[in-house]
Length: 174
Image (cartoon, rainbow, N blue to C red; front, side, top):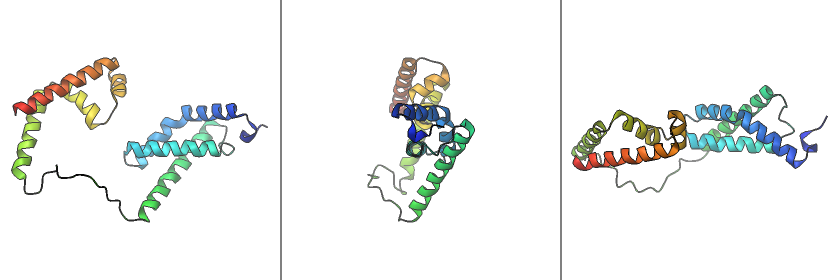
């Protein structure tokens, strides 16, 4: 029996490519659940999981179901390690300019801004609101939105551009 360490580098790369192609989506879904929807963190953990699979390719079972369980176990342990690491150190402080956020005293300004945004959004068509929601609120890429809607990528980009232009016009009018 040929062990993974006895394989050629090309054979190891093919095996890892097959592991990624067959299991990355399932592992990413698990990581999204475990990280409470933090996509960037989940993608980083998926990358680390695949790196561990590469380093320990001898340990990854050959059967697809067993390989998926192995990858999910590694991913889950990485999440646990990350939580433990954050618990062991103080909270991170980000140096972000927060002067643009209205203060607690600015209720009139906040109410007016909220009204203007609601009014501008109401002036958009349902399709424009849906498109802006997919791209900016949900955080999907134009490629993902194009796939979901069955439209060419250029159409999604141009419709997003015109929806933003209409929203900007609505905000200026308010």
